Length: 229
Image (cartoon, rainbow, N blue to C red; front, side):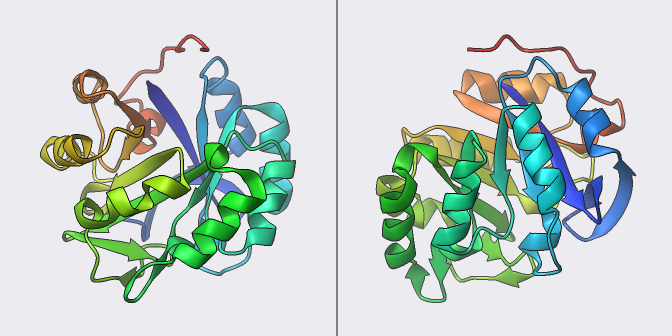
């Protein structure tokens, strides 16, 4: 399944190269209209992710208008509950899922108690082989393939971003996603550099969804609505 992305920064839907350099921006509600008919839309609040504010007003409207998986700055149980009350289709936890020494089981247990594991996804954003947090600004010593099974009890799936190729329009690492697929049976959504329909179809054959931003925004990957399930 192809999942279109809306990354929010400064009130706009933006696309960044490797999470830092802004390549383009658009009206988030115009993008939502283009994505009508898709069973899921990924919405990440980048300002909240890097602790630079938030786009809550826009986020609330988007959740009312479409089936949004929401992430970015989800670091308290209160925030988890807020997003559940907004009827977020999924709530994506990244930074708060990890401590310097490993998995933050205390927080994840609390989040699971608050809304149930069905609503929760955990982001395994990886750069140079290590999970990165705080808007991809800080690298941990953890590898996704080493902790993914430990995280299974706390979520219904994973968002796995290959940060090294994010926004670069150079393709992604199918080898990395194939490795993760061999480790966990839970749903995986791949992100980071996915550029062509062929890559999306290859991921689908692995039973992995594809979250795509830059390739859609630039027209490299033409949209076609996917049937709602």
